[in-house]
Length: 230
Image (tube, rainbow, N blue to C red; front, side, top):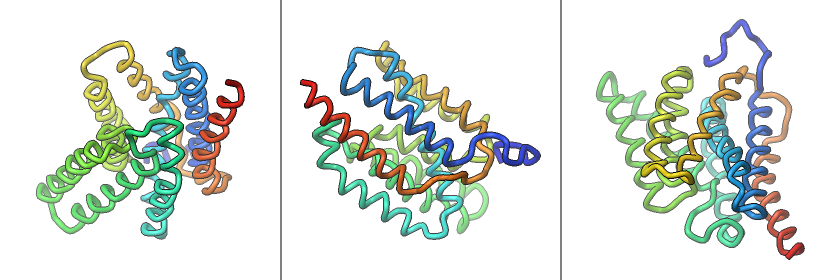
């Protein structure tokens, strides 16, 4: 476990982390739609996706029905894409598509790692991650290859926070290359490791549907508010 067992319920539950990620995401999208020149708001927003990536890996470890979990993500990805294309970007698939693709990658990697022993299983697992990163880039999911890579390494190193931190650092530097002021803002994604390190292994209070609906609803509300103000 990332959190020491004797900590018990001290720290942040899964739902607490998700609420925190929702707050960071809201700040990010306020910056995107209302204050596009505000570096601070977008920097704060960089913390949201890594937390969701970590919680997807956590969700996979605890789900009792993988197919139902995947179906929820696919349905929201398909249902919200029309709005996402008009509010955020017509060039990318929304974040539910990123999460769904990441979940499939984890499932295949996990199956191969269990079926193949030793170095062969590890190599196959790594290959799956690389192939799905390439696929994410090719079909242009939100955060492209980087999003899939964060999800996959969150699963690979779920119980090894230092290894996950190193992997995320290297991936973030690669994603930010060539280095410039705008791309370097992604380095703030690494700050998400602080609340993640406080995860106490407890589900916490909350409704799973809230987080799906919040993503869709807050973007639509912000967009309509922007149209009204203009």
